[in-house]
Length: 497
Image (tube, rainbow, N blue to C red; front, top):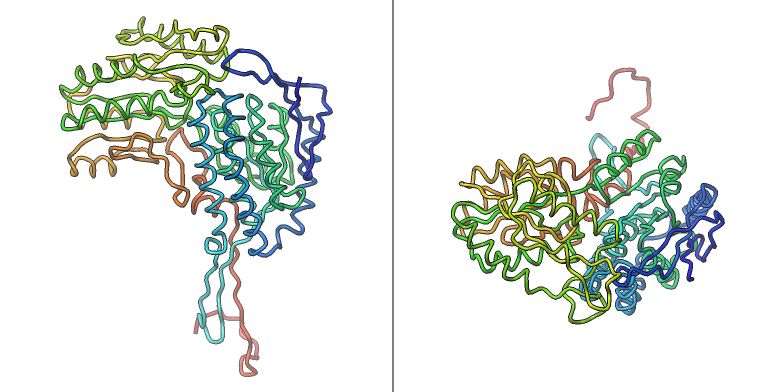
């Protein structure tokens, strides 16, 4: 059985712990690989390697850093199909979706290629007589990233290209459920000319995570995952003196006003709720139908949902693949049953779905729940699967109050032809990312990604300008080139004259 090991100091490093985790093919349910789980000593070795590499990489010229990143972008482009195939084999998402993930990650590499423009400092001359003040930004040192299973290539690329472009070195702990894509990203970075030790990958579980959070030589930690773990990452990281950027879970609402194009809204609800089997933190999980739109809209969504083609991700005919594990599939299915018991109408029930020839795969059909009570578990909790809830609201004001009452604030969207209503919504809704007739408003690379409330723990969003700020620290330099006339003792408070 193939073992996915660590990547430390520019080379493969076999796991020494003797502990391994299973890596499944979700379409068949079979374990095809295993992943090594790092010991504390192995994490320490990766951090020590990164710390040594920082001595030269942290002072490398911007020209040298960008030359590597430009080459890296070329290699990612040449290998995008290969990376997508690794994602499909271990996560299960269809190939086109995996390709889209790689493309989105490459956007951040392209952003990192513009680092000379992004880290330019400021200079004020003659702030006082013969005194100049400059502000610069410098790297932190060794930084770490802890990334989720649902985007095994894209989310790491949201982190390490920006971090290393800023002059830091990086230790990545990817999800143990689908680790091959991250490992391949590190191999390609070395092929692009990234010096040994600048990017390291340690596989593992909580042992590796906790050591990264505790290690005195880790300056900052980036995380994307569930809200409970994001809270844990923030608290433990801060306890050990680290800068923390932790993105948590979501319950993204899509508000549909009576004047909206309902066919377009139904199409977009399907795409945003069921793409990648709903395993996206930006997936639409709740449609809020305003006024008398509910019955017609639900009918249109149901018609489309019943026609979706579900199958293995490597089948070109498949529109949706399996879920990541059998346990997760069963948990997602349980929300449909509990919603029915708690008063929701189950319009489409996908819990009994099987794929011929793949009966042991982790497949689940799509489900559509209507008139879901806000007290139901399916509404209150993050499901992270192909289950779409519909709730009804009499007015726009009722709908906005419903959305703002959610403890999450990751993404949201409004569907309408009314510019005034759209403008009100984008100003009044309490969420970090807002779409107007766009159901998944993930920002492009040169803007930042992040939510509000229980969807973000820390002060900075990820990538964009916030990413640059997170991975650098400011320094202000005040300079005087004295004139002989400036000599003399003066204990008074300095004045800018």
